[in-house]
Amino acid sequence: MMSRHLLVAMLGLGMVLVSGIVRAQSHDASVANHQLHYYDIEDFGMEAGAATCADHIAPILQRSCQQCHRPGGGGPMVLMSCDQVRPWAPVIMYRTAVRDRMGAMPPWFVEKDIGINGFKNDYSLSDVELALIQDWVNNGAPRGNPDNEPPALVFSGSNGWTLGEPDLILRSRDVTRPAIGPDWWGDIGLASTGLTEDRYIFHHMTYRSGVLNEEGAGISGDITSWPIHEVGRNADTFPEKAGQLLPANSALHLYAAHLHSNGRDTTGHLEFGISFFPVGYAPEYSRRGPRTGNGVDIDILPNRANQEVHNYVVLQEHTKIIAFESHLHAPGARMRLEAIWGHNQFTLNCVGYDHNWVKQYIYEDDKAPLLPKGTILHTIGFLDATAANPNLADGRNWAGGGRSVSNMFIDLGYSVSLTEEQFQAEMAIRRANMKDRNEYDIGCPLCWAPEPVEPGIAGSD
Ligand code: HEC
Image 1: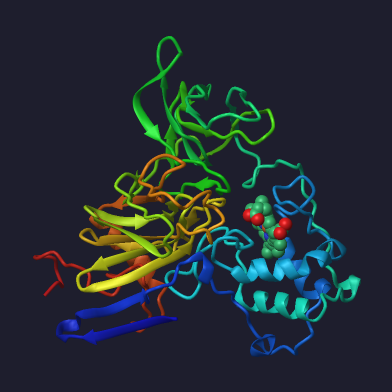
Image 2 (image 1 turned 90 degrees about the horizontal axis):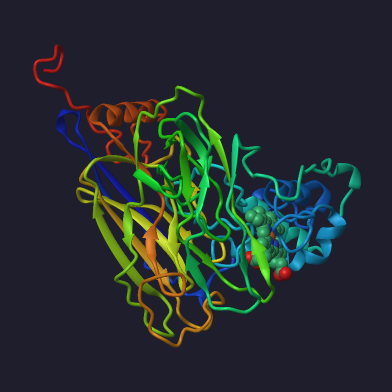
């Protein structure tokens, strides 16, 4: 399915040239041809028919499902006890085997067989967990010995914050949409922070912020854009070295909301939970917004699967990629992020896409790509505009780029710029954690390159 081919040639003077390509082969991303991931439990050293709910399935549900599939949670059914789970066994086997494609459960779409492995809050299932679910279901979904079931998890409230109780909660005004009505895009006003001092933010979600103007009726000065929040999206977390500033006397401006009538008169509001870094914290790195993509010039043909859109960006500064967030619209099926450096071309990650679940993937600190300036980032979007794509209302028309009902193709993730010193320091940490020179870090093409030495420094010659 995939070719992984790496050639490492040692040249004189201790210089290492890494040449080759690590990338997925041309890929059938059409929804109709999504492959299920089925495994044989015997390949994992277990006897067929040995998996039970109490021993093997309950722990998986606790880690990866119950945050949504619990009373009052976001999931449509409760998967708290083995009795509740059993009727769902066959459909659980199917949805989990979809693994990284549209419709997968849990909703997490990173392909595991290529690219960087190591994301924060990753609740996806491993190969052996899929094998256990499949063995359990194929054997009639046996309960096992109830004494072996792990104690039930206790959840606080039905609408708790996934990352713990925030330091500050901001609320928008109420907005009402009629049962039936056209889609509405617009400004739902300000939510003022009431902050009396500048604070750096650790995590939250929102639109944009700025200091309140004199009348308190708008924001002015340096306007900060915040990550867009969408259906099924997880929370934003800003790393320790790159917090985002929310100044004193500022407000969030909720200037672009898309509201869709849902068949019932509905009144709703937004809440923003914000956690702060301690007072006095200052970020080391400057944060940059989305890097690649094209929201405008998109040309999606009707009724066609496997359409590709490409985008190239040359990094002007040394860059650490903090998060990857594929953003396509309804026809979206998959996205690939590649780094091209010198004559090397690396697949950093491939992720499936489901427009019901717009996911942000935040790299583990020691896995985040560290790319030298001059690297070309190449993003490829795969789209399916056929009737096989259940997210698409009607694929019979050509569609261009634009708002929710049209298309987009952007990596909404974010990165930080590094100075030469910071870049070298980050690579030194990475190198120290590598066992030897045979270990290769896909996201760090210069990790094993000789450190530059400034002329005239003792010992440099
Ligand atoms: C982040 C929240 C979330 C997590 C985590 C999650 N689910 Fe779901 N699940 C949902 C929602 C919402 C739906 C309905 C919408 C959809 O299908 O995308 C759903 C749908 C399903 C369905 C289809 C139900 C039907 O009516 O056909 C199954 C089966 C399922 N989930 C199983 C699981 C299992 C098993 C896990 C863990 C391995 C899991 N889910 C993790 C939120 C979640």
